[in-house]
Length: 519
Image 1 (tube, one colour):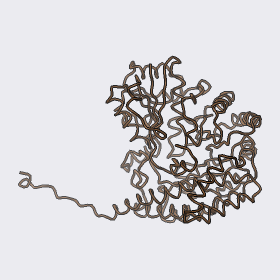
Image 2 (image 1 turned 90 degrees about the vertical axis):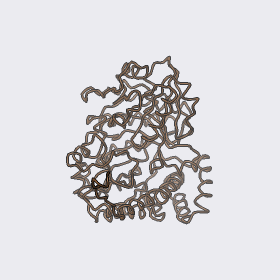
Image 3 (image 1 turned 135 degrees about the vertical axis):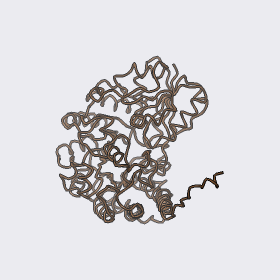
Image 4 (image 1 turned 180 degrees about the vertical axis):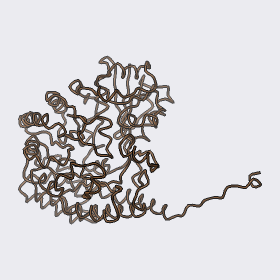
């Protein structure tokens, strides 16, 4: 069979870094790891092609070449997924959709021939039946107690990707998280018990990326890398030896819970293995909101000291933050701003609370009749439920918080704090030729023509006189900041302003027609 795998397009968001890519000389941020993992499960004699709409168009010739089209992804990609399905079916091609969004909301993807729910490992027969036409229109997830053993997961088919078009490559070590945050759908999809691959599997994946000529940043996409600490402790020395033998070709980063800061030995092992950054779901400095969201792990540590400790060990902290919890009132915006402003977190991703389908939050709000949307993830300007805070107050406070955080002076100040507090680390590479090319683009775009060029030059100078290998990092942060600043001011703030204006416009209610008028 001829199989076309299609990665749906991401709209412009904070995480897309669409304004960064031209400066970096890349087309997209990260490739579709899920699709190339599924590709590795398909029969070896099938012919496979992959099209990523984030780097190239989908042509009718691509669709007509294929016997079946596989697509899938996150809720934020839903619009693009439906367009792929529509085009493929219009040309008579069988369509199979899967991934996290169809898994949690299968009824929203019935335009595909088959909705494949859950993980694919250990279910190759069901996957083949879905693709060939032997399956029903809905392939359910397996019971929670029969989640696949990741030691059976094959090496992803990285060779199907145009790797040089991406800023970052991805590998996965574990799935699942031991915590029970109310708003998170990870435990609903992957469970509470983290499952891990063998060390040899991860090294083989790094070997494959290296052999394909990829160098630079590699995202270990685990939702909580330290969920299975004993396994991680055993893995990190292996990665360190692999990196050292090849002069650290990969700068690694991942996601982890804040309790990493309480395990200095583990954090140091990550740094010596080449990790330079970690995304942490901090969410809020409000203890009441954390308790309400059942994010108990964040209540056990001083959040400010935890961020500073990780930074001092050599891990840049990228922070996730949320406003709109039931416990929030109008004071939360100043609380969030003050916390972020005084901590070294350049990438402070702040979002409105969203009730994702299948989560404990979704179920609670559905029971109380407060849901009012699907939570597709592309409606950043309005919550998809009735908030306890006055909605106009919520949106105005959120807009001001974003404007303050991504004012150029504030962003560059947080970057400078990282340089001042970070030690030299093995994974943070010195500047090389590719960085010089990026620097020249950044100088033209930011250093010469932007209204905040003095902040750019100040950060660059600080990076060059600092003790660590910070020049390449500073260039990277400057071009990432270009996206954060532009997206905030060109996209998100105008949409928030429109939403606020809608709330200011009184709704016109029409009186029911009288029988005479109806006649």
